Length: 613
Image (cartoon, rainbow, N blue to C red; front, side, top):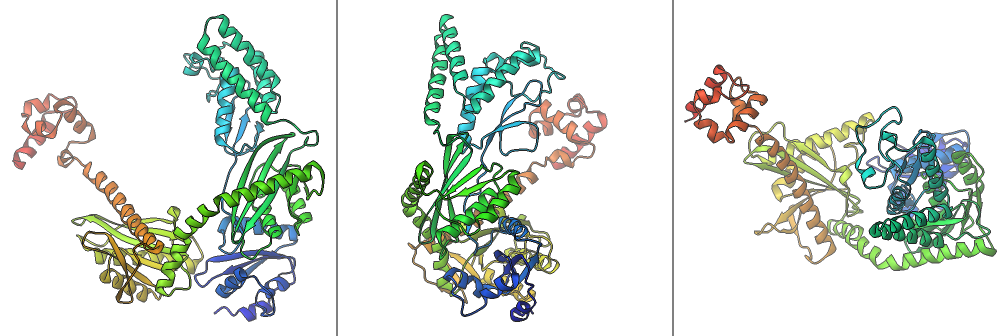
């Protein structure tokens, strides 16, 4: 038994990370401290003025653990990694896990390529970006292909060559270096112009497009000339959007925050080599009771702990407490000095104010949408929890059986977290011990397997496939299914409430069966709609799995039952006769005449079907 008071006495006065667990051993909060002894004890002192969110978190703590490190910097790095890995419920979290694309120029190759890249690799290629839009990257690549005819094949030139030019050559989007139709020097000049354009120099590409447009018009290729004209106009518009400011000559991000109740949005402007390349906003959760500076600080840890590009300057709308520590953290990640500033005057302050206004506008614009979504999900889950008398309803697991007269019996486990489906946690089971259409016995097997695995993982501390236990179990059925689930849980010594999802005569969701009675539900409420979505999703997942297995089983041909007839002869027979009915009607001589067949195989097939008749 974990005694929190006794464990608090053992805490060392050293830097480290502390990890809070609830009764199901799930990690609900991760934090760092210069002194673990002082910081962790504060949570359990009644005199401390804790926010409502932290008070709720503390009330759920069943045990805590800690990891001692050598410095506050090591604690920060470890904290960031653990938060990213476990996404604890009570930490302030980035809602979006965005990975910004790059353009990768393989300058280490004799004939370089210009490619879309999901991340910045540790290779000798040249990377441009990050770009805030994958569509923008693809449009840019399309422009460069049409303008400079850069190859995008995987041939290792000049070692490998192709027999003939590819389709892109015939489309005028590749100079076919694989055929020796362009020299390395001439191709290299095109790559230099590509990199100049990607670095913000638009003059070379505009001259190139003007030249191509005139050449096409001179050759009376008016459609091609019009295409080059449109590309040129796109480049000119791009140049106008990215006008440089005299004071913005370095890479910098401008980040500002706006909050409203339990919602927070951070707006980031991305400036590269003095040019605004894009902007993006990010929603954060778990901000209740936290001040703006703290939320912005948590955003910086999580966002810049994951993005491959870290600018030289980071302009913020709030003075953050751990500025120097984060500057050191970003220095270690990027390999160069990073300044974190809160500008008070001039152009930089104006940009921060603009970012802050954008964040407020996004928050205001999406407030109703967010509220409606929360009502449909978290609000609906809270409604069901209140109906059942549960303190909270974070994770719900729902189970269903599917079979056709006992054939290929399967089960589905669907997981909803805070009213949203978590498809990564879905599980499917093929029934192993039950013969025939016995849904109760099948459900007993599935639940026993699911929770036995979970207990084993918790005991061994190895694996996360089944170790997360739900706050509620939903069965696709009434009293019988609920009783089976409760018996399994009792035998395993697990205490989780179980409900049945009952349907009416028309097979529509009717309500919940709980504690031996059917609970009345408002069929127009969000809780009822969520229940219907869970039941439909559970049924769909089971049906799809069963259908896939049934399809695989039914691919089996009756010809497979004949000795001496393997896949090759089966295909030859079907090709020769077209159907099994025609094979049944064939004579031994006709069967023996088929390619790959012989007299013995023909006799086996003929005899088999005669016996069937």
